[in-house]
Each structure stands twice: as C-alpha cells, then as structure tokens.
Amino acid sequence: MTKVEIFRKNGSIVGYKASGHSGYSEQGSDIICSAISTSLQMTLAGIQEVLKLKPKFKMNDGFLDVDLKDISQNKFTEINILTESMALFLKELAKQYPKYIRLVEKEEK
Image 1 (cartoon, rainbow, N blue to C red):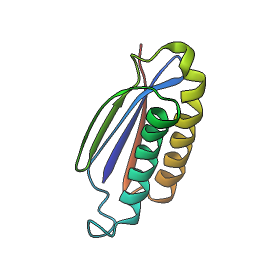
Image 2: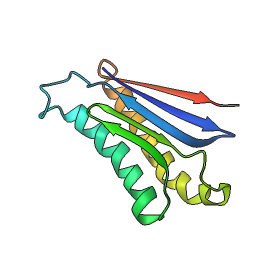
Image 3: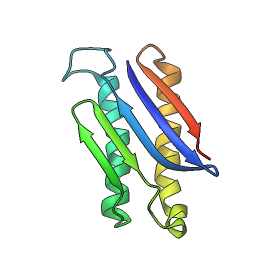
Image 4: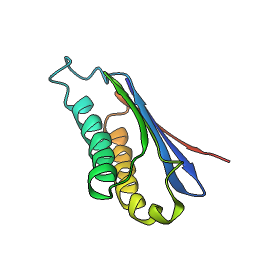
C-alpha cells in the first residue's frame, strides 16, 4: 500500500510525502502506483518549472517528500492551484482503490 500524507497550515498545503508501492500489480506495470507518482511528480514539476520556485524535496524509489514551508506566502495562491488539484485527484483515487492507497491529511500548528 502507498501512504500519502498531505500537510496543511492555515488550510494551505505546505508539504506532501508518499512512501511505499501500492501492490496493485507488479512493479513497472502498476497503474495505481503510476497514477500516484505522476500526480505527485507533476505537481512538483509545476512548482519548479512553471512557477520557478525551489521547494525542498527528497526523492528515492517509492519515496517522495516535498516541503513548501520555506516558500514565500505570497506565492501560495499559485501553488494552491497545483497542490489542491493534486489532493483532489488523490482523494478520488483513494476512494476508488482503498486497498492500495492511504491518504492522510494533517493540519500543522
């Protein structure tokens, strides 16, 4: 199962982390794992390449941790479009495939 954590502060997504493989199918042909990875990495690429921002992140096989806390607050209107779209997609995926993806949202203080 893939666990995805979305971290929020004052309602805005300030980070996200994913770990594990979904186990839906063999690695390399797992459409659930592929959908999760695509969503997470596309969001990160949009933040980096389209918005020209430099978030902190760590990426390894089956692991991605993105930290947006150090980015200026005035950039969050643009970031929110990307991150909220990602969160919406992941929520729907988790509803459809609850055995393969666990989505947890946490509000930070």
